[in-house]
Length: 172
Image 1 (spheres, rainbow, N blue to C red):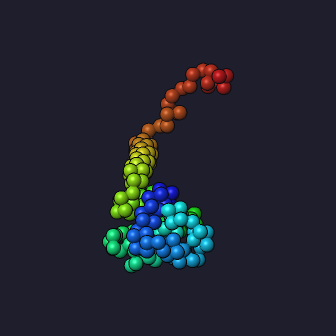
Image 2 (tube, helix red, strand yellow):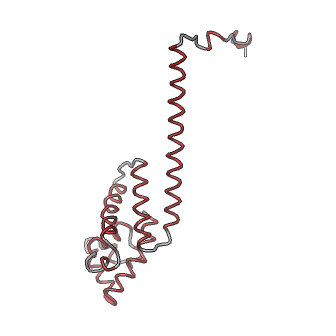
Image 3 (cartoon, one colour):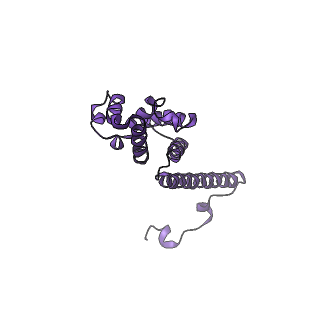
């Protein structure tokens, strides 16, 4: 969310100024009237929730001139994801990847430099998912080997191997 804020802030502020000129601060404050803390700050310092809300509500006046319907959908999706994150709802790794991908797509559309960091985060998440998948497959394979040994009427290793005399006597 921090990278989203950093990437969207300058873009949103610039586009508001392009449309509203000297009145951009008052226009932004009008969109944030229900949050006085945001209304007192420059738009570039707003949090991700405020920026996404402003983009959603000012879409027709400001952002549809430069962004398409796909980006509007991303804004809506990211508002929902941000709310889930803020309310500490759990995310699966698929949800996390989807969120990172959506953030990356929106930041790419606004030419934000934070895209590279998002891409690295996506790759790290994929690496973690792959590692977990490998561990899962190894556990499954080990369980299958144990079941196969049991099915072949093999004795457990403890019944076949005789411990060294100091281990067998408990004097180790």
